[in-house]
Amino acid sequence: MTKFCPKCGKELPDESHFCLECGCRIDNKSGTSKISDKFSNGKIFLALIFLVLIVGGALILAMGGNGDNQTNADDALAKEASEFSLTVSDVDGHYSSENKDYFYWVEVLFQKVPSNQKEYIVRTTYLDENGTDVGHETESLSHVYYDSDYPISIGYHTSYKYIDVDSVKVEIIRDGNVIKEFTGKADKNKFNFDKPQGNQTN
Image 1 (cartoon, rainbow, N blue to C red):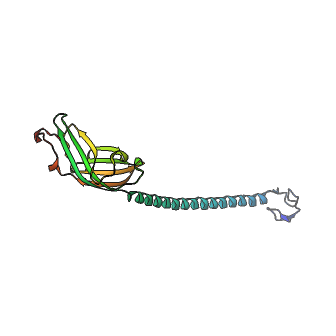
Image 2: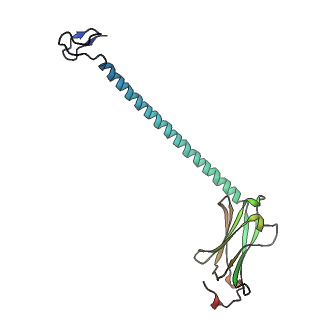
Image 3: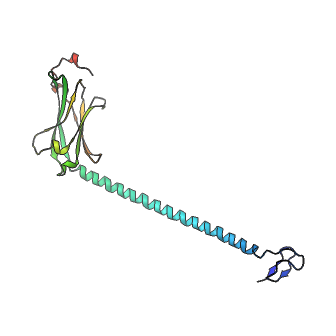
């Protein structure tokens, strides 16, 4: 391999460390070092591109997978919800002079329920005219449901003060997730509150 003095340009033997013409020091590694540095930088650049491609591909796959998982979960929830059918047929209230408390309950007619009732919770929420929760009860579906052609009483709620119930919401829950929700309007004229209205407090 021929090399030349970087200062005067004289052709030199390969093993020369000094120029024979001008005495300039010759660094045998300088050329190699520059090539090596460029090569190292190129390797780093290629590695970075490769890493970006891998991470980007993984993110795209993950997002696609999560979308599919979410779709499957939504489909399963919709299927599960279709196994329930009930009607809120009545909302009842009664005042006990003996106990001096107000008693509320809901009548529901179940048309369809799944066989694994122990896995479900029924939450009955009493709402005022603004939709605010003024009282609620939670119970196992297996404790309230039985096969009947008639309405079943659920959501027994006792209050020591009058609560102005306007409507109710009945939720079927499994593993903390609301599977299905049913609502019904209260007919306050049917409430059996024999205590004078003046003694009822909101």
